[in-house]
Length: 413
Image (cartoon, rainbow, N blue to C red):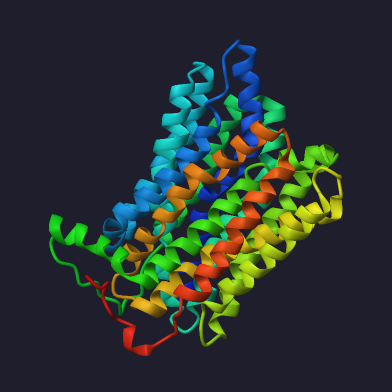
């Protein structure tokens, strides 16, 4: 039995099961159309529907920020609660559709499922880094690659089930599938036998003192770069299906969604592994931002979306998905290089608050731009400026080099 307890069965496989389930949040654009049809058919407004995705990302980030200590202390309770919240949120969304209740959609998909996302996202990360201590980038890449691969795997499945049985019943079926996957991951997840956590009793002052990390200029720089990369990514990824429709590719939108899902996952694994071989892991973020900026400028200069230049549009979405995924996988390892492994789950959770804020701004800003201009091409003006700003912040404020001295350091107060 002990032979079966290794880094693959206790870390990699459970991480993939957890992240492949919760990563389906990025299939929202493939679900929302079916939900809209039901509500419009009932004569209801769907203007608030976009907030379901925004709230899900917001509560993901905030639950990670405030419950990082809880995850740190007990990954089993955290992963079980994640499984329950995520499944209940998905099934509850199905019930909300049955009751034609927009408020219940926002509560179930946005709040309840969002909390499950945050707990599920954090639960396997530190465990992976402990099992793969010599290849931490590869380890976190494995976990969050599952998050990106979820869209690749489930986008066509969601479409097929919704077409076959309708969106309400589809959500009940999907909730059951994802709960089983996450529950198995919960049962398998385990830290190495040699690792002993040192935890003091909960203290409210000590809890909030962790947020003093925002007084550290390095952390602020990391937070801002992470926030901007997510905001720009969400602005485009949340409108991916609509962009494919705008350039005349609606018939193959699901197939293209699978393809960009693959690149999202590839970016998470590839960029994080690349970081393992660099003296300064932050160099990866420079590569990500430069490539995203270059393709965005090209698409903006050629009017690619408005002119239906499909090759450039697809290339843009591939590069954005690559960089979006790579930004996530490099975050915990970059933080561990700077601050050590001592309280990495807590610190990683605090950094994920950037994801929460981006969830309220990324796709919402894009929606405002499209409503004002009537064109998805206009989103590129916003993302070009933001990518340029992120690159400047990264160059001048995020200067980090790996050091063995911080391996077991605690978060600075």
